[in-house]
Every structure is written in structure tokens, then in C-alpha cells.
Figure 1: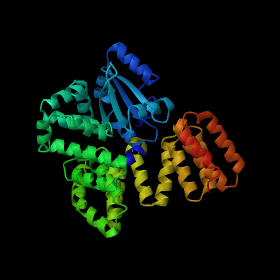
Figure 2 (figure 1 turned 135 degrees about the horizontal axis):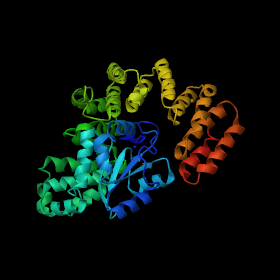
Figure 3 (figure 1 turned 90 degrees about the vertical axis):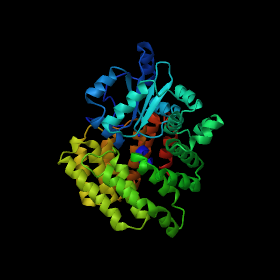
Figure 4 (figure 1 turned 30 degrees about the horizontal axis):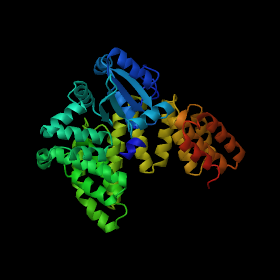
Length: 433
């Protein structure tokens, strides 16, 4: 899931902000929901979130969206804005996109993580709004012996990244429920997901490997890339032969997943990027360089075919193409595409920043700086600090340290109070080599 955060919400027509006009703050949205007796749908997004591009262009529009917005108050929370970032921390939102539904009384009704195909998203929202997904009701049903309710509650804790809390709740169930629960495949799988969260919190690689292996043996659909990613990360410290032996059994089921749910005319899984990159990472870990290149090139060819030469037709797909080209180190192809993306999406900072950053990282500070300067004019909040960091790298490489210090001072004065951790790293960039 790290790709999703690093995963989580974008606008098709421009930036992620103000794609759907509404309340100016989440506090205002909650107050409006209370006045109008409506739930609030909080759409956590950011201008750099590729998954949000998909949702904006493929899901959050049309008749279903219009019908939904009459039933709920919509608030688009920008992860790069201080107030919205604080709400992310308060609601334990870890990656984008995340959609949280809050009732008029302030109680969380449910949440949806990551991209979803259109039908799945509206079905999940309808289930949450129906009232059947209220956690208090589910817990009561679980205590009475409903294994479906037990699984629902455990899944809710997993969506909220509350592994320890979920397992603690499970331990409060009557013994007659706990003792038969593992016979239910949904409950058993949900428990392993919570154990995986606990292991990740503790940075216990052996426990991560154990839980991830059991989860991958189940029917987990579009979550497969994220769990495989956990397994790949936790196994890095193992000896090469032992790691290959551990990972080899994942190859066949993952290829079947790609063939049936990703590389199809109508993909069942919305997050194609994570699916492709996890496949490439698996091949790399197995020492299969040809397989790694093949899956990336297949994704590149499919992306180009679906775009039909129009980068604005699907921003998610266009950005996926960029990332695949980065991964295969296709320098000339990537240069051409990134310049095309800058021209196609001039209204935000993202592509000027990404192209300028790549040039600086490749030792071309003089070429990269103008793109970073263009990005800085449109950057704001946390992302402005990120852009300034690379401006500093370029300026220092060009021996223009006085200008670098001035850029840092200006950014710190305007954004530092809201983002102290990022600001500290920015200031340190003036002295690090």
C-alpha cells in the first residue's frame, strides 16, 4: 500500500482541489450535515495522488454521483493543506484515496480505501448508508453469534488500521463465538489481516511474512498487490536463496491474477499501477530480469493503446505510463512523455516538479531548475516544501547557495508553522551533502 500513500485523490479536469464545490472546511461540512440531517462524505485527496485521478475521471461523476451528492454533504480534503492533514491524523487515514462517511451525530459510518471500479464504489457506499454497516449494530450481532458480523467488524478495524484494537475486541466475544470463528473463512482471513497490521506496527518481519503468506493463500481479489508488497518488503533481509524459495510460490497465482483481473479489456481491479509494479518487484526478487522487463513493457503498450494518443483522456493511465517508463529507465521516451504531460496539465505543479526533480537527480541541475521554478509558482502547503527542497538541491549544485537560503527562508516563513517536520528537513537540506 505504500505506493498508494506515496499512497492517497485527484481531479480529472485540473487539480484535486475544488473538483466538486462544497463547504470550505471539514468543520463546516460536519456542521452542515448536522443541520440538514445528512451524512458527510469526506474525500481525502492530494494533487499528486494517481489513484485519485482514476476516481475523479471514472467514478465520481455521472448520474450515480449526482444522486449520491443529494443524499450526503461532500467535502474534499486536501492532504497538503494543514487543516485537512490534521483531520487525516485524527481519523487515522494513512493513504489516498480514502473515503470516510460520517453521520450527522459525528459517528463514523464506514470507509472505503483505494480505487474502486464504479459499480463497486457505489455499492459499498449504499451499504454504508443503509445503516447495516453501523459498527455498534455489527458488534451486537457478532456477540449473538453472527460470524458474518464478526468478519464485518474485523474488516472495519482493518480499514481503520487498528490491528491491536480489532484483536482486543475479538477477545471480548463469548467463547462459543471465538471457538468456532476460525472455521469461517472470512473471519479467519480478517484476523490474519489484523495480525499483519500488528506485525507492521511492531516492524516484526517474521510475523509480517507469516501473516502475509496466509492472506495471499486466500481469495483477496484486488488487495493481492498490497499484501505481496508487504511480503516482499519483510523478506528483504533474508538470504537470496531463502528469499527466492519463499517468494517462488507467489509467481503462478500472481500471474493468474494479472491475466484475469488486470490485463483485460475491462480490468476488475482499478489500481493497475500497484498490480504491475508488484509483479515487477516479484520478478526482480526472483532474479528474473526478463520477466520484470516483460511485464512492464506489456503495461506500457497497453497504456499507450488505451490512451489513443490523448493524455487528457485518462490522467490516471497517463501517469501510470510515466511510472512504468521510469521503472524501465526509458530515458528518451520518458523525456518526451513528461514534456507532453506538462503541456497537457499546465494548471498544477506536479509534472513540472517531477520532470525538474528527475533532471536534478540525474546531474542536470541547470536544466531542471527552470521546471522546478515553474512548479513553485503553483505549489502550496506541504507540496511547496517538497518543491523547494529540490530547488535547493539544484541551486547548491550550481553553487548558488545564497539563493538557496533565500528560497528556504521564504518557504519556511509561509509554510513552516503548519508542517514542522517537513520544514526541519528542508532547513537541513542547506547543510547536507
